[in-house]
Amino acid sequence: MKLRLAELLTIGTIVMTAIGPALAGGFSNTGNMNIARYGENAWLLANGEVLVLGGANSLAAAQSAELYNPATGKWTLIGNPDPAGLFGYEAVLLPDGDVLVVGGSFLGSGGQATNGAVLFNPSTGTCTPTGSMNVARNGFMLFLLPNGKVLAAGGDSNFSEPSTAELYDPATGRWTPTGSLPGSYDGYTAVLLADGEVLAVVAQVTGSAYLLYNPATGSWTPTTSSPPVLFHLVGVLPDGLAWGPDEIYDPSTAQWTTFAPPTSRGGFAILATGHALAAGGTFKVNARPYPIEETLNTAQVWDPSTLAWTSTGDMKVSRTGQLMILLSNGQVLIAGGQTFSKGAGHLVPTATAELYTP
Image (tube, rainbow, N blue to C red; front, top):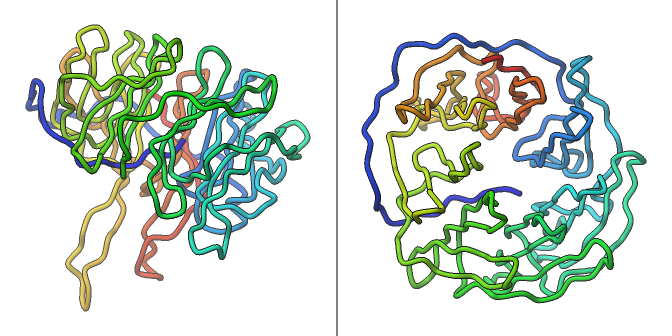
């Protein structure tokens, strides 16, 4: 799913760090995607290939899926996951290999959300209709739970912010209500914890909070501790801690630890070693007649023992909003995003891809 930023409260241990000396590690070119895109969905498949689906840029991006083969470095278009012409849908890879594509807004609908859902089969490149959500949504949480069901919660529903949540059962193709959020929200960041609970940090009308969804009880529990100011949570470290580029959450103590963020914020990936990679981002240039935003090619690696970011090699292409996913061989695939075009004078989508080797 796509994570949205929330402006939240600050609490926890502040660990001031600086970018240290350069580390070994570098970037190398690999094959380009067939279609330029950013903000795409991506999953590492059991066979080691990477499935990329949708993304922003154009209807061609939203209505296409590609497979990356690390052995050949090539991308192959495999079909249309979005025959209805949706933008901003959410998607999740199911245990049987199908992708559940759900929600979003129709092109030309003025932002009207849909509750429709389809199953995309990457092997055949075809879609099959499945049960519709009870509530139309876009920009919502979507998680595959350990029990095989899929949780959809919150989001935007035709200019309102529902607090409802529901579960999709792949065995029946039906959605059933589950515990609602304790309020509406207009921003969130969320991860699936190692114990199967969902940790969501939300911005609500009544203030910011973090919530835990328990699949066993179907309930959301507000915690007593307030979250820090988050950039966003990215995933879970091998030791079970929820990680973001400037914070860690320990489920066993319900405590946050914050530290200085990296200078590169275009994309993030947790490495097999428990370290993390940050790459790309943007910076402002006071050009005339108007300021412009350009992209970075720099990268840093985070060390869990020191909570410090250290510079590593530069990307081949400066970019932001790119896909970054850990491969089976320990490399990180970086693909797509937006890059600054000198000719256009602004950011443009890119189809380029590269590999980071620690």
